[in-house]
Length: 450
Image (tube, rainbow, N blue to C red; front, side, top):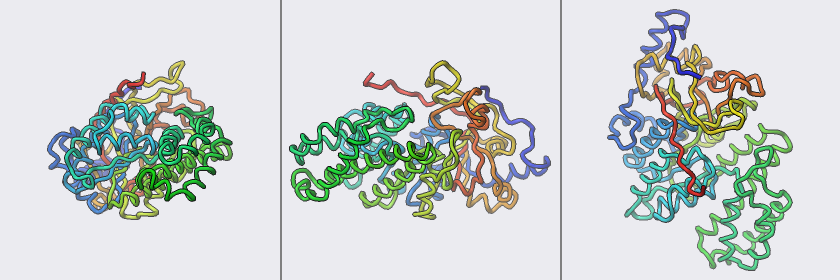
C-alpha cells in the first residue's frame, strides 16, 4: 500500500471549524525536537511534568515494528531514569526469559543480543531495543546495586524459560526432586513453540503434575530451598512456576472458550505480574513497554476478536491516576511486520499504510505541521472545541506484529485501513499521545542462534 499525505477532506463540518480545531491541537500539544535517544532531553520537560506523578508509565507503540517509536520510548526512559530517579523497567516479554536481560543490565553478565533473541519476539530483537539495553548497562555500571535499573518481563505465553530456570534451581536446591521431575520437565517444556491454536505447546497432563508437585514442594520445603540457594533465587523460581500456570490457563481458555478468552487471561496475567514486580522490588515507579492495545486504559481488540479487558484497564482499575497510558500515532512511512495473506508464506517484511481515515486525530496532528508532538489529554480538555471533538470516537493507527492483506479471512481483515486504524474515545483510552509524522521500519537483527 502507499503513503498519502492528508487530503483536503474536512475533519469537521466546515473549514473554519477545521482550522480552529487544528489551532487548538497545536496550542495544546508540545513539539519535540528529535527522536534520537542520545540527544539533550531539555525539550522533554513537559512530558516529564505530565508523567511526574504516575507510578506506572505505560509507553505504547502504534506498531510493533517502528524505529521512531522505540527511539522515543528509549529517550523518555532515559529522561525518567536520569531526571526523576526511575529504577524499574518492565516489558511485554516472557518473565523468565528476561532474567538474562536483567542479569546483563544489572551485572554486565552475558550477551545483550543473545538475551534479546532469547525472548522469542523478533519485535524486541532490533537495533533500537539493543541500543536501549546497552544504555541501561552503561548507566548501571559502577552504581550501588540498589541504585541500578532492573529489567523485567511481565508476559506469560511460554513455558520453556520457566522450566529451564526451575530445572537449574532444583539442581542446587533439591537434586533428588530434580531427578524425579525430569520426565515432566521435558513434557512441560514447549521449547518456545506453539500448537495449531497458537498456544504454548506443552503436554497438559505432565504440566498439571509438575504444577502440583512443585507447588507442594515450595510450600513444604521453602526453608530448605532458602538455605540451599538464596531468598531471591527461591522467590524467582516460585514465580517461574506461576508463569507456567499462567501459560497453562491461557491455553485452557483458548481451548475451552476461544481466542478472546485467551486474550483476557493473558492481559490479566501481565497485570498481575507487573503488580508482583512492583511489590517485590519495593519500588515506587516503573516504565511499562508494550503495544498500545495492551497499555490503553479501556479494551484490547484486533481484527479477529471482540474487545477484551486490556492490561492497562486492569492497571487503571487498581492504580487509578497513578497509571499513565501514553499511546503512539503516525502519519506515514514504513514499518516492519509479518505479512498475512499477501505472500504464499507469512513473511517478515516492510509495509506502509494509505492516508489515515477522515476524522482521525492523525489527520489533525498532520495539519499542525509538527514532525514530533506530545499531547496531554488533560491539557487538551482546556480547549473547548478540541475537548468536544475528542469526546467522540476518533481513529488512530493500530498495528501489532502482523500486517493483514486485502484477502484476509474476515471482513475486517479485507480492508487494510479498517484492520490497522482503531477507533476509540481517545481520552478514555489514553492519558496522552505521541505523534510521529514520518516513520522508518525497525531494523530486525539476526538471531545469533541461527
